[in-house]
Length: 322
Image (cartoon, rainbow, N blue to C red; front, side, top):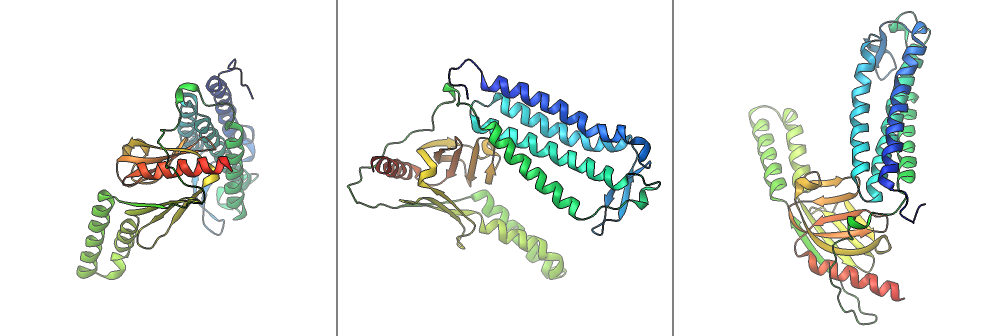
C-alpha cells in the first residue's frame, strides 16, 4: 500500500478498471465468436424452470442484449470509483465491476454450454444448478472486488466525518439516547396505496386487491424509524413492529457528527446503499452521521441528532481510554 502520496489511488483505479472493462467485454463476445460453428442459429436464450428452452435469439442479436447491461454497469463503476476520493467508493465500484462482469460472463458461458453441439435450439437444456453457480460466482467476485478496491488512503480533501461535541460521562455512568423520525412521503404513499387496495377490494375482489394492500402495509410499516444509542452501539428499528433492525456496534464506529442531507442526494427515501455511504433516509434535513472504521459513512435521518452524536463520541472516548 502506498503511503507516500507518489501514486494516486484514483488514477490507479481508473487504469485498472478500464483495462478490466475492455478485457471483460472481449471475454463476453469471444465464446460466441470462437464457438460459432458449434452452436445452432438461433441459440436458446430463455429457459423454463425445468431447463427447457422457450425463447431464442440469433447470434448477431444475443451480444447486443448482453453487452448494454454490462457496459452500463461498467461505466457507473469506472466513473464512481475514479471520481471518488474515499477508498470505500473505490471498493464499492470495484465490487460492482467484478460482480457484474462475472454475472454476465457466467450467463454467456452457461448459455453457450447449454447450446453447444446442438443442431436445433429446442434441443438445448439448462440445468437449474447453473443458476446457483452464476449467483454464487457473482457474489464471490463482488467480495473479491471489494477487498481489492478497499486499498489506499482516503484523499485529504475528502474531509473527515462531520464532527460533534461529546458528553461528559462520569466513570461508570451509563447513558442512553433515543429518538425517532417519520417520513411524510412514505406515510402519504403507503396510505394512498392502502386506500386504493380497499377500493379495489370493495368494488372487485380481495384477490385483486392483495398487491395494493400488501404494498400499502409494507410502505406504511417502514415509514417510521426509532434510533437508540447506548454502550453497545447504534440500533435502528423500523415501524411499531420494530423490524427490520440495523445494529452498528460501537467498535465499528470511528466518529460521529451531524450533517444536512437531502433524500435524493443519497438515492431517495428508505434504506439506500451507495459506494461510500449507507443511509436510512426517511426525510431530508439534519442527520446523524457515523463514520465507520471501514471508511464508509452511515447516515440516519432522525430528529435532534446532535445529542446522539455527542453520546456516540463520548462512548468512543471512554472506550479508547480503557
